[in-house]
Length: 458
Image (cartoon, rainbow, N blue to C red; front, side, top):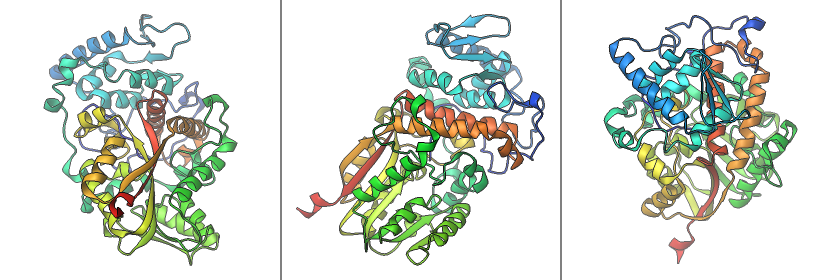
């Protein structure tokens, strides 16, 4: 899964080893919701953007201005923000999501200095808490267009930094960007993913339904249903030569091989490659599946079908043409393409394509979400491929993320035993909840998109 948000500022990114050493957690180190409490002292070498809030005259002024802006926005939202002095802001009633301020001044300094990046960093630091983090973030996601006054939105390009050059997804940078997320630890991902090790939206049979009714036991089957639909749409069967861009941990390659396909799958994650190869060999499909540590741009050969699940989000805005040109180049006559892509509204995509965000800094360097319109435009302008069919399933992603979030929290102590400290765990929880909030609010969607060349053959 690749998610990006759309506002804020940041300094240099942390790398994938800044999670800190394993720690022994006493009961007092955990919040009532089972989330690790932020430590009283945070190591500045591990977490330079989190250990201390910004200070100095400039930070004080920016913090006070941000605080006034935040309070003004909150007064219009269906939310309750509770302060240490007993005051409460927001239009929410007794059942509304509650955001509890622990250190208001630090919170304001962080958002004054770093916008929405500061919102995430302040949660990582423990400056605020929420009993239902996803619900709080959903309120913000639903109001993203009005949180910042329009005159200040127009000044976005003057104060938001561009993506650091070393994080642009040029070939020399892409493996590092991918590694910083996917090479964290296979054991980490296994703590909250289901037995298929699928890290993308599931497709729940009969619809996602109310989130509270989707059970963990249904997730593996729903992940396989998602994969099977993509394979069906791409026409994958006995004898199909299939290219998979983005291996994950091998479930799609396994299911394609079981159909009799020959699979060439590419990844830039050495951790994913190792586990995928292990799973494929154990299933007896090593002779049908090749998992290569290779950039998609370097793929050669000809394939009857191309499938790519939530990979385009890691490609980067400026590289979408070459992504689709590569698919176009290797696709055999009569071949089909099926991709699964997280999408955002086209207007927001255009407004934020140069922004550097909390998700970039801490989760997915170099990532960016396309819009459906962008995918259609890029393929029409740069390839012979045309979008033929698409299906939105954002509610299914919200359900998937809730299950991941619950599993991650339930296994938080085990995650700590792997060496991921409290700040990392709060960061990861914020990421999962922020992502779920995007889908629950309708701000984000996920699409299964089918492409072919029928128009070019007329």
